[in-house]
Amino acid sequence: MLISKLPVFLLAGLFLANPVFSQQGKPGQKPKNDPGLQEKAGHETKPSAYTTDRKIKPMQVVAEEEVEVLDVEAYKPKAIDTTLGLAVIAFGSCNKVDKPQTLFADIAANNPNLWVWLGDIIYADTSDMKALSAHYKRLKTNPEYKKLRARAQIIGVYDDHDYGINDGCKDYPLKKGAKKCLMDFLDVPMNSPLRKREGAYSSYTFGKGGQRIKVIIMDTRYFRDTLCPDPSKQKRYKANTGGDMLGEDQWEWLENELRTSPANLNILCSSVQVIADDHGHEKWGNFPNARKRLLGLIAKTKPKNLLILSGDRHMTEVSKMDMQGLPYPLYDFTSSGMTHIRSGNSEPNRYRVGEMIVKKNFGVLKIYWVNDKPVVTMQARGPQNELYQEITVKY
Image (tube, rainbow, N blue to C red):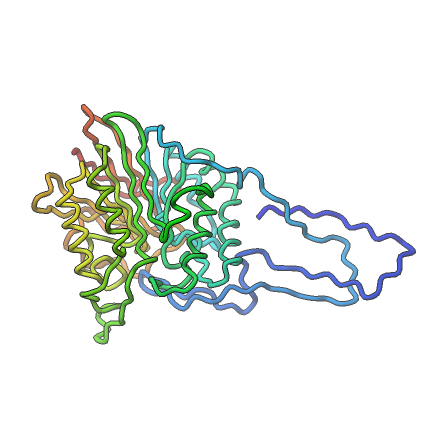
């Protein structure tokens, strides 16, 4: 938040009875003795509530008071221009605003045309919408994030820690407010249909002619059914075989987006992993019927050259699946852990190609075209723009 201090001149001769000034903590600031967010392997639990450190000091004369000044640059509306082509797409997730924001300069060094948030953008973990908005504001006014925003178009979706509750789903009573805060953060126009419908799912088709790229962003929180803990303790949750991830309205929308896509490269974004199914944390596999439905929908509609992007896991990896009826391999590129990472350096994933990398990271897609057929290089990168892993797919 941009703050300036303005002097308050006290005039002699004025009689003031018990002057009192209150000082409010900065948005996102933890109160004293707050234990913070406790982390476990690959997932956060027990979020502490957002509170404001407020102190009233009677009989105190304050020479200066903090006055909030609007950061015009950070809040200048920036509409999405889909006429522009995409050569570099960067994405990431799991970014705590109360930790150092060190990766934005490295992300910008890749000259991305588009940045995609895949959830856990701020880690507010709060049911107070003013506090949630303040967390987003703290990120939006960060100097390095402002530079990225000036360079790249930005789209995305929340995950549970922005949604308001750990592992949250459709029964969260404040989900409409959480969606509004996200829309404000992403500069979604007030007259956009996205503002008016339930859920934060969206799609954008960039570029022209045979080199168009469609980005489809699913909302895996707003309509998702509940999960029950696994009594065996072998996994975080037991499978909800009858449960759903998207809700029928979003399923209908998604089928239309895939079936009618004019793009020669389609990028499907999910806040949680789609293909990886052996771990015990949040994933599409916790709803096996929904996962089967999604994969079947991709095979049935056969969108040209579809690639999945995902987050949530506090590590980076690439999963690959060969599907009957789909004329190309299906990849799921996971990037997660911009400010913090999981414990444990190994985890089963029968679909993994390459390595699982447990370091702070962001993902990069570098795209070029050969006779309107895309060649996509998936890069996992980290601090100082270090290249961890690179996998190229020629469609």
